[in-house]
Structure formats: structure tokens, C-alpha cells
Length: 115
Length: 113
Image 1 (cartoon, rainbow over the protein chains, first blue to last red):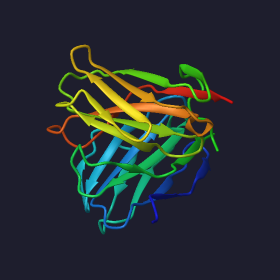
Image 2: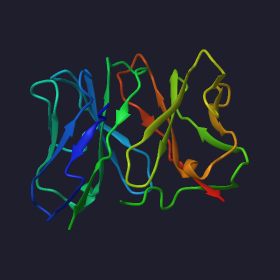
Image 3: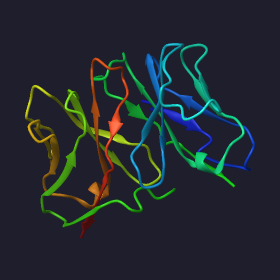
Image 4: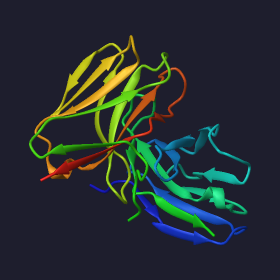
């Protein structure tokens, strides 16, 4: 069956531009997560949704980062006024029910490069 | 795709040998642990998990060992194959503290034919 999909796969932005990254979770999955992965490092948690409710946004690095999931399915991570330090792979994951012990399935990621 | 793990510790093994990848986790309150495999240009792929009330769990060709006393986790891969070449991450979670996973730094496994 279809896994988690993300688009675009690659995004190049000039410093100061706004970007929007899309995540399509596995159909029927209640929980959705965003992670940021710098080159050579493990993913770091950004934010978590259960259905349309954003229950945890403690990992968002600044108020330039904003995520939404208005209908409890597709999610968008928006970064305003991008900076060079925002360059990373942005991973989306979904899980069926939620809870720390529910397996998270990851998408391929969006590679963001800020020039 | 982009390269994952340019500066990660590397384990190089011969095809057919067994591999052992180690991970030290940070939080003694963590009660759930997962191993993920990440190939270049792809997202992390679930391999195996273990709960803190266990010290060993086996899957197909893989075994995870948990030592809570020293906060150490290991992944053993039997009869390593070229397709096992990837970066491996351990992750930990606390079931009473939200749903986020905390990932370790990763190890690159290279399998020589």
C-alpha cells in the first residue's frame, strides 16, 4: 500500500523566502509528526498532530516555523523568512493511533537548501 | 539523493558476517526503544523495537538487546548482506511524555562483498 509521501522532494530557496512543505500520511493514520534532520545527524522532533489538533510544538526552533493539518489528513510545514541554518531534510512520519509505542512510518523527506 | 551520515562512525563488515551496532541512550526514564535503518535519499525505515520490560527481542535476522543498567542498546544483524548497507539510528521514547522520538547519532554500516 501507499506509504507516507512528501513534496517537493527538493526545494532551493533564497534567504528570506517563505517555503511550504507538504506531507501526505498513510490513509487512516491519526498521528502525524514532523522532524528536522541536519546532514550527518539523527532526526530531531519538531511537532506532532493528533487528527487536526497540534498537541506538541515544543521542537519548532522559532516562530518562523508553522505547521497545520486542518482536516486531519494532509499537513503543511511552513517556514517564513528562511535562513541558511534552516537547510536540512524535513521528515514527516505518521502512526495509526498515536502514543509513544505506536510505530512511526517515515516519508522520504524534503531536502531544503537555503542559499 | 542526498548522502546521509557523512561524519558518522562507520562499521565495515564482510558479507555473511554478523554485525553489531551499539547505541547509548540518554534518558533513564525512556521505556520504549526502536532501531531505524536509513538509506541514502530515503526516510528512516522501522526495523525492530523493544520495551523496557524486556532485555532481548528477535526478528528476522535481527536481534535487539537492551541493558537498562548502563543505558545501552544494541542491534545484531545476522549474515549481513549488501542490502543492509545504510545508516542505523536508535531512538527512544517515554510513554508518559508525549509521542516524540529522540534519535541517537547513527552508525553507518558498510558491507563488503
